[in-house]
Length: 146
Image (cartoon, rainbow, N blue to C red; front, top):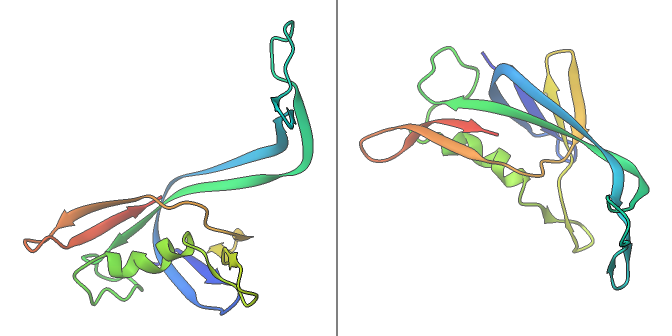
């Protein structure tokens, strides 16, 4: 049932996921920013919009919902745990960054692999987790990771 994996470029470590393929949002941001000076934004009394400055480049964001559930049978994920956060912790850690070999912080490069159509190199910039289906002891057994 595993459909998606994240591969760490540096180590080759594989973080498998389950995916709800109902939607994937791909958002492209152009390299455009409001024009600034040393004293603040550049504006004018007769301008209706702030002047923009093209800085080049840009970014592409992929927003998707990943499913983790320790109660699903037939999954390729190691679900020998009662707490689903044991499965999601490696992914949430990718948004924390790490110390590089030069002593400066860096965000790990990861490859998002989904079937044969998606193989995208990038970084995890944000993670939001919704926990569901709790045991009597309070352990969540299902997680939606965005």
